[in-house]
Length: 177
Image (cartoon, rainbow, N blue to C red; front, side):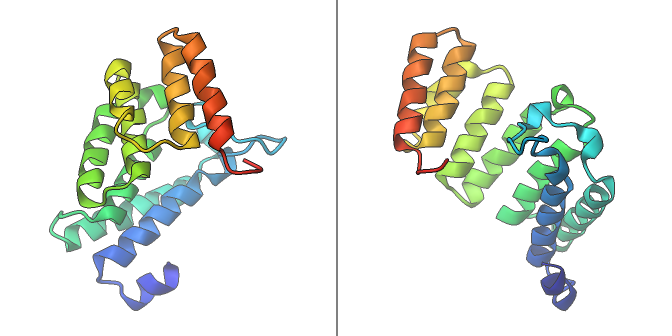
């Protein structure tokens, strides 16, 4: 990405790809605990996030958006979502409505089941768990969709249904995951 950006410095897409990678890499030190287990975003120690990479990623994203007359492509939108997470000091401070807005744009520009699922999660984080559960029905079944549904059902105290969804998630999960 660095090489591509250096070869095409005025192009918005390579700049956005580099911004996305930097913003993603900035959070890497907090993604695993000492035992090597995944630490979810809400539990990550943000003091471990690399602020220099975040600053550079945001700067590159802004440059990319200016060069595209603020007509964002999929990479710019993904980088904007990552930047939105990176800019706040804590998980509760996250502007979930802005995250939803960015995912709305992403699914319009580059539709995919992964983007749809992430959008549903963001909607649930705004407090609209019922709406999120309804929206899950339009997403093709996968282990991740079942896991998200299980989490949302548990939030609404529908524990038996949540257990069933977890069983389904495990049944369709690829081996070793």
